[in-house]
Length: 363
Image (cartoon, rainbow, N blue to C red; front, side, top):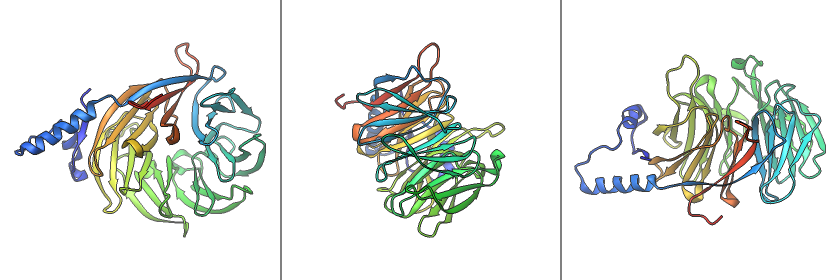
C-alpha cells in the first residue's frame, strides 16, 4: 500500500496537495527525506490480535467505554435495550437490562466508579454503580441524549442531547454531578453535537457540531462557548493532541454535499488547518495513540484507519484495514496498546469485539 502523505501547507491548498503523491524537489536531501517518510508510512501498522465473540448480541452497537483498571468494556446494544459488560482478558460476558430505552452514549468514570448511560429514545441519563450495576440516579434531558464527556477539573459530566437539525428540539449540553445525578448547568448549542473531547491541560471542551460545519470550544470555568472553529465539512469525530497543540477532525458526507470525507489537522495556536488526508466515510470514533505516534479512526463503512504523526505538522495515512459492516464503535485502551472495535453480527458471523494492536508489540 502506498501511503497518503501531506507535508506542510495552508488549508486552502489541501485539495491540490492531496492529488499529488509527492512533489518534486530540487534538493536531493528533501527527496531523500520524503522517500524515507513514505517508506516508513508504508510499513505494516496494525495487526488483528484476536476476537472476543459476543454471540448473544443482535442488531447494532452504538458506543463503548472501558474501565482501565479491571479491563472491562461496556457496550451499548441499542436494538436489544441492553448494555454488555465484556472482560478483555478473562471472565464471563454479562448483559445488563432494565431501565434502558435505546442506550447510546456510555462513559465509565473511575474516580466515582460510575457507569453513565444515555438513552436516546426517552432522553434519560442513567448513572449506575461500576460494580454491581445498581442504578443510583436518573435525570431526563432531551430526546437523542448521546455523547458524554467528564470534566476532571470540576468533577462534572457533560451530556449532549436534542438538536434542531435532527428535529429533537434545541440542542444543549447538560452539566451533571455524577455523584447525585443533579443538573447543575446547561450550555445551549442549538444544533446536535457529534463528538465531545475534553482537554486535560486546560479548561476546554471541544464540541463537534456538524449542522454548522463547526467545532465549538467551551470554557469549562465560565461554562461558555468562547470560540468557534470552521471545519471543511461535517465534523463527525475528533481527537486532541495537547502536547503539540493539534486537534484532529474527521468529516463525513451527507446527501447533496459534494465534499469528500477527510481527516484534518488544526493548529490550535494559529487556528489554521495545516493538513488534510483522505478518509473513509462515516467515521464514528477517533483516538490518539501518543506512545506510537498514531491516530486511529473507525467507520461505519467497516474500516479501521491509522494515520502516523511524522511530526507536529506532517501526517500520513499508513493503514486501512477491513473490520465489518457498521463497525464504527471503538475504544482505545492505552494501558494495553489495544484498539477494540465492536463488530455487529453479519453474514452468519456472531457479534464480536475485534482487538487490534500496533505491529511489533508483543501479544
